[in-house]
Image 1: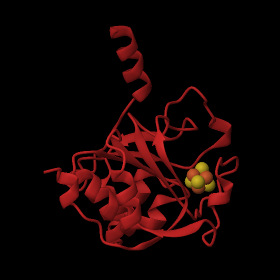
Image 2 (image 1 turned 30 degrees about the vertical axis):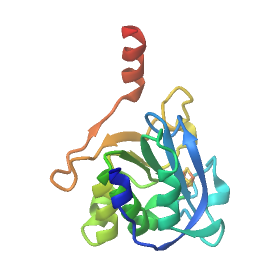
Image 3 (image 1 turned 135 degrees about the horizontal axis):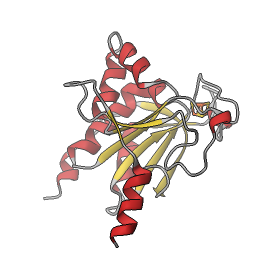
Image 4 (image 1 turned 90 degrees about the vertical axis):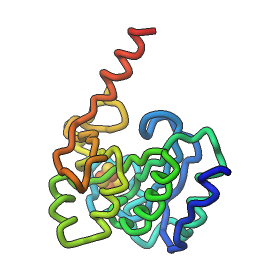
Length: 189
Ligand code: SF4
């Protein structure tokens, strides 16, 4: 029996900016991308300024996101982007938990630094839950002065891709250099 059929997600409303059903630019491999609506960071030069208004976008629910995610068996993971995913930490954690249960991975973008999220997680269990289901955290605001088009999966040099799979057992996340990983893969072909 397909394990994904036995995994369910509690139905909770969530406001989205949009979804991309197949992406190869929002994390490793083929991914389903969820862009949430609402962002408090207002980074100058943000590529998705329409996602900032907390009343914008459209309302759907976590169950629909999960059902749509399952439609494509080629998808290897989910990416939470935005907007600010941690504004919807409880809802995304529920979807992310299901994704992890079927053996796929979760990438979460955030305008907060990892250190700030760790601080928030001490008093906000939803923030802790989203960190707990996340494998790869792309952290920090977009800084226009540090824009770098050569970077993989992020827009400016201050942003890190952190492997936070160890959380909450450990908070010592390691930085992943996907740029070198793909270069090494190219050389070995
Ligand atoms: S955190 Fe992301 S979505 Fe929010 S303003 Fe910055 S770049 Fe835009």
